[in-house]
Image (cartoon, rainbow, N blue to C red; front, side):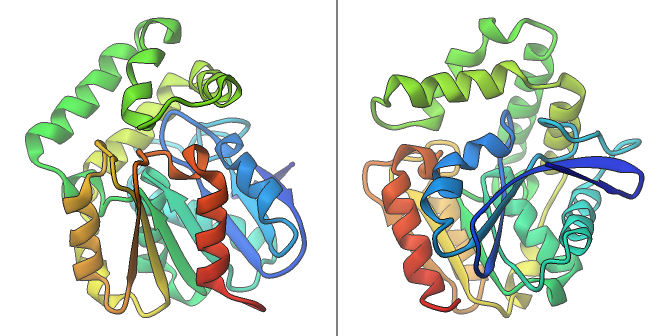
Length: 262
C-alpha cells in the first residue's frame, strides 16, 4: 500500500482493526521488519508499519534531511491516513524517531514504545562511536551488500535464529538503497534528542534486549532516567532486534503495556 504525501509516495504495510499502532523500523531495513507484529498484533490493533523515506517502496526526502524532517514525514503519514492519536512504536532508529515525532507533534501521539532506541546517536553514543558507525556505512554502501551483510548479524541477534528470519533480514539489507540509508543514518548521527525526554507526558515503554551490543544497557538506563514515568523492560538473553528475535515476548509486552481497549 502507498499514499501520496507532500508530493512523495510513502509505502506502508497494514493489518488488523482496533486502536491504531504505527511502527517505525530501524536502519538497513523497511516495514517488512514488523511482519511478526503485523501478524501477531492485528487481532487487537490496526497495525501500520511504514517504509521510511528512501527505504522499501517510499520515495526519498529531498535535500539533506534532518531527524525533524523524518519526524514530520511520520506526522504527515498519520494525518494522510486519518489515524486518530495512534500508539507510536519504533525499533533502533525508529525508536529514536518516535521520540522526535513526539517532540514536534505531541498532540498526535497517544503513547510511545521505544525498542532498542537511542536519543539519536549523538544523544546516546560517544562521538568516536558515532563516527565509526557512520563511516562504516559510507564505505559499505560503495560495495555489494553480499560483502557486508553478515558482518552485522552478530550485532542484531544474541542467539541462533531460524533460517527464515535470517533470510528475511538479508533480503531487506540486500534491498537497501545507499542514498536512502546514508541520509537516514546521517540524520540520526547528528540527532540529540535528550532535551525532549523530560517533556514526554504520554505513557512510554522502553523495551531492550539484555544482550544488545548496539544499544547497550547504559543507553536504556539513560532514556529511562530521562523520561518521567517511563517503564523499562529488559528481555533476558536478547539482542538488538527484539521484535524479530523474540516476537512472542515482544508482542506480549506491547499488549500488556497498552492494555485492553487501548
